[in-house]
Image (tube, rainbow, N blue to C red; front, side, top):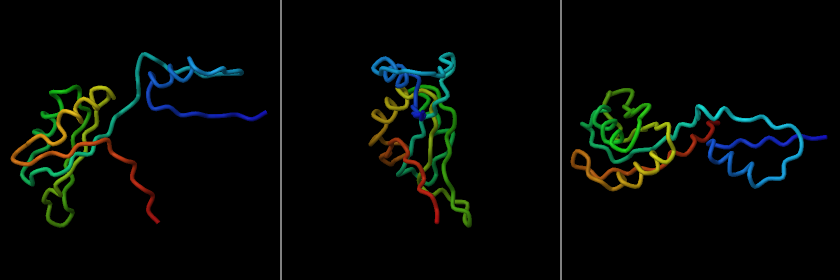
Length: 122
């Protein structure tokens, strides 16, 4: 007898999948009281003078923000012009992306999309 393990990103996705499947065997349920999903959003084309607080405030208008981080050059300490925002609710994160992508923030048009996982380094 073999086992199949399926990892789903959200409780909603798990509910849809289990409703459609004809599952036989033992199943572990998800604690639906707390969804442990964080949507990681890449934000590019940032002004080099933009603060993390201003970035956080821009996304907070669309939902709860867990963290906002602007990456800095190790040698100079200067902004690298991009960062990441984490939001615990996927629908709020998607709404923030659709409404903020291309919008002007501190004189520059933001580029916002769901962050892709970092490829492994060799």
